[in-house]
Image 1: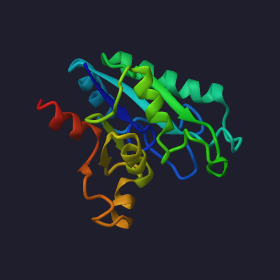
Image 2: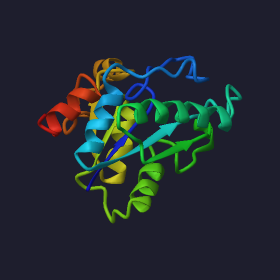
Image 3: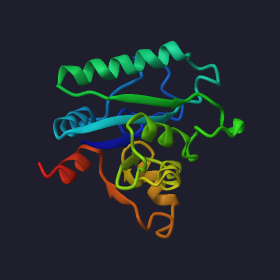
Image 4: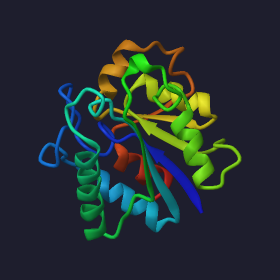
Length: 181
């Protein structure tokens, strides 16, 4: 049984610089839910690690965040997929907490939850450089998608910063390549 860790906004669902604040704004990226179901069917557990500072900013509350995740779960259930765990950081960047990416806290908690001594060989899929940094800090393998803020990330990062990062168009492209469908 494998494990794959996904960022949420920009990887699973559409992202917004104005934050995703409710279930109406939570819209899956085309093919992302199908990709998760493919990972499930191939024996992977799927965990989500997402910064959600909109909570601390007062843009939405924890209950609304859970409602967004219920919507995601319901949509996944309809196609035979699931997310096994969602970890989130509700803090502002200024709090310098250990759970907010690019720090590895959330990823290390996921490792504990799934009984992994190390995240070596576990993919962490994100769309920002802070996702890449979090993966590296936790010992996971960073993977970048062009969805969400991915194209912007590729434009501003140097080749040296992304030297060990595989880049894919979207989550479905990752599933299709890694699972050789």
